[in-house]
Image (cartoon, rainbow, N blue to C red; front, side):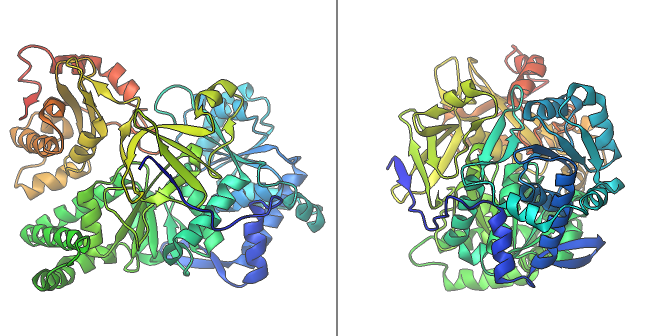
Length: 607
């Protein structure tokens, strides 16, 4: 099979738009809870559909009073918080176009987005964001006002709109049609300047309505979800829209440091995260077990959970003995892990990179069914997803209704459907390059099995060709090595080289627990890069990863870098993807040392 289309389930009127998600819910269930807002630690205050709609209208009136015209871009630069969702829908109610900006963006990035999108009014979270904007304000002439959320910016906007009528907002809410611009999302970009992806009301509204119909057990049965990924990224943004379309109660957790506490008090029924979050949860649980002298029990329970999950995919299912073991493991270990997620989470949606079969089976084994999906900013986040009743761990599932996939002769994944963007803002050349006729070129490599499940095998541009002519997809190796508790990031190298190598960075959060677990004294990350036991553990991690590939594709040497890749130092995008081209450029000397004769002191041979 090399092409798959899932029939459309929900058809929207051409005149509808994202505002209809609120107005329809207001008509159907005005007293239902739409969101819960954390006013103090652990205390969540409900906001009904009617209350949210009233807040949206009041804020939209203020935007109108401040001169926002239909079609005007309005910027939002903030962490994930309730005010983000409120602003999003208020801008749409005023007829505007929200333009998200990561709060971690540099002044240069902010200047580019403000000027390229033509942002007229900008909301920033705090004084630090305002200071960043101030550095480049003179180079963004379209931006006439900057309002600080933490300094009363939203209240001031609401006050300004006191004289604007309800009729004007009702009129503006009806202006956009399905094919009108809803937002411009700038790709965080692993190379070059970010491109502005123009997404329409159809892209979000049609995809959300159909996703709810496609996976109702998760998205349409009075669920609860806590957003903590950045709303400036398309993944969280889509889930925000999906939650309102499906009736999920929304919560927001702006600070990752408080995430475990927030999960415990909000008690979501499903969560969304990237694979790195699931890796860290597993590693921290393992280290906590070691600190409590229960490492053997944890490892036995983990193996039992994985075996139980794998048996679910066999015709006979788990044996009686395995079911009994699983019950014991649940009592001793799994129930405690679920409690850390609030105790109610049955499902999780994972995207932004491959999760890996081991973690997929582990989490299903503990009672958290991870629905792995796949998509890009250009496809309004998901184009496909596994479903509770149709899951194939290791795949990213079936296409959502109204979405089509084709595998090109060279293995590239091509997409089309109502979720595909209309073009890159002000960049017709890049738009033309992105399409093969009516099909969008994703740049990802993959395959479809006979049942229509899609699997991702790597990035086309990241494909490494060794000096011997062997094609190597680095993601297969990188994902497996990064799952180790000691590892933060891994970049596989070897383009036009005699063999495959790797750059590895240590995880400063995972290191202390690993050292304690292995009876070793405290040490800095820099000291750990030369510690024989640490290097031996990394050597084993590489050897395990190599089992997934042929000998010609396996990592022969690796080197441990002295620091980590982070958003702050510019080597990670805000969605936690490595900026590979920048890493290869800045660490070119480290790469060359891997291939230098007699490099054993700085890198390890692996079999």
